[in-house]
Length: 95
Image 1: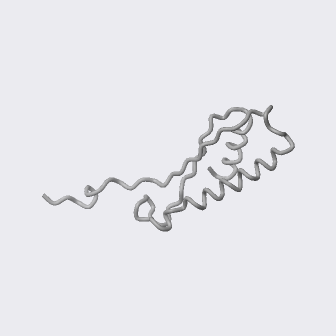
Image 2: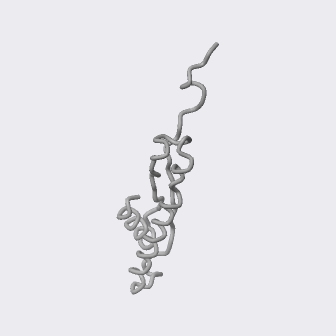
């Protein structure tokens, strides 16, 4: 029995990376430092995005091949404070 190429291996997965975030409530945050916190989060998320673009080196493994882009997801319980700040920053960064 000869198997067709499509049945010889499982389907290729999409390239997805998830970042989980938890943090402090607003009453535990220094409100003067929130803009700095937002900027640091943005920088970190952009570094993570760049670091997870492994399809360039391993494109044969993922749907879309070497040109596949990583789908970035932020996971947060959306509590008031840091959780929501991170979610807002992530959405603005295209997560």
